[in-house]
Image (cartoon, rainbow, N blue to C red):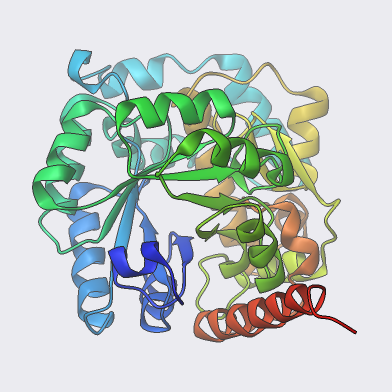
Length: 376
């Protein structure tokens, strides 16, 4: 594609695949887009292992990494201890999670051990853990690094400049975008409220031109509900330089969810998602299920991150595992982050095939637009 961003990053097509699955990342990069590995829940050692695999599988094609590096990293200490984190979980929230599981015939006797096993997530949010993750990321030839939450701190921007790696940041409003531009980020990802995972309230159709209007020379990627090439073309007609997609990869053969969740997504409509704070403490869009309905209708007020994550994720991990074993109650509870574009995700294919479908669909949409300018 004749695109400055493509030339800058060394890619053929400005389709960015955010995924927690290394197979998706490598497949999209090989197909001409850019895979971006979501590493928020990994330890530094796990991140190194995953990036070693990705680097070996990308055939020299560019790939990126998405982290959470707190804006206040320079002011933070090491953060609360494991004992303080676990001791800060209110009995009311613990009991409610156990009750929801019990109503679906699921025991909760191992949730404490599951919580202990994921405490590294909270360490990634403090200064020491975040810097370790940056150390690992920049030890590989990444071509993009993204900050998933908030304005990247100066230390992240400085290290990226030194390594010659562009920094991307997600924004959900014009105000957020202004702060990111002032901080000096290289790429803005305008994530509309249709997006899966953490998202705001402004729709992609409104947000993208708002962000473009203040971005100046900073490229803007459109995100939120985009699962087809024609949607990507529409976003680029509004001034975007490409598309940042996450949900569309979830129902690919390589995508990380289990088969039960994939099937629920393939059968879902665009109305079958919900924005809720019950999973992480911050508003995120996910597949509607018995779990989300219970928390939103009867549950206690969600805790701030990472406390709510320690309440929900151990239970949800157990739910998905049991659902895959054929447990009907777990299948009813099973959920996953996904955007409203899920209503257009109706068949399973490979990640590489999705990239090719995007290219073809984009071309057909561009030709339709050009036809409106042609004479009779």
